[in-house]
Length: 98
Image (cartoon, rainbow, N blue to C red; front, side, top):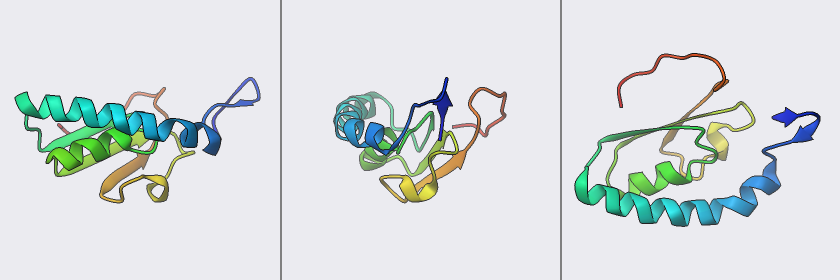
């Protein structure tokens, strides 16, 4: 679990309280962005449970990749078509092109 000064930052209650509103926002923005861009792949750094990735997938993106801390996992993604990779986002990393 991610902690700061002994306080849990991203526990199950956090995700339960934010996932619906996050998905609603993501759906709105993804729909409008797809009017201009039609990306085939999306990467989300700090993806949480993948609500933004799911929204982009529903608009037509085929490759959905999420990166977040090890407190998340593939099993916790709200859409199992999301490829999830746990990582420390405070450290440098190299990625493919998205």
